[in-house]
Image (cartoon, rainbow, N blue to C red):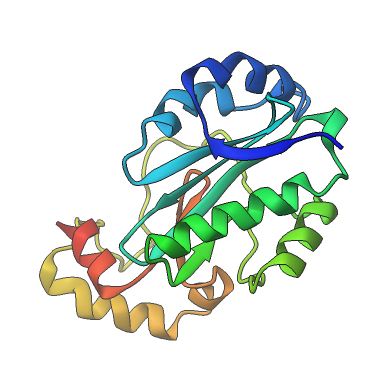
Length: 200
């Protein structure tokens, strides 16, 4: 039986991890661009799973707030897949964020990644709260136009927060996105405190 260990990542793990991440998608992977940031993240931890001392999986967790945790970047080397390493790494991540005080844990995965979704939903008390599809397009007209009767948008102020909350409470979009604010591939709960911080 191979010896499997889960531990904090080390700088010397980088090349081995990037080698098994290189074919995650057709275009490669983003792990090489976030490695240093994740390795030195004071609000999180970068984990590596090793098999007989060699890196075989990687994952990162971070605390977005005092109680909201984010799990990301779980990768397993192709030769070690379907051996329970991803599920075990998931358990290690959950234990870490719960020890840090998380009461909510979130992550994003592609809707077509059936194996990952099954593992996530069966291993944890996690369930799907939202779905989205990234879309990119060139603007048709670079000149802003405002429909008749609408004022030119202005920056929100602290005085607008109650109106923003009222709008969100009646919006059909707010529940469809799980009450979350997405930036990049991370999501935060939209709370009054979050809105106050964004307005500030």
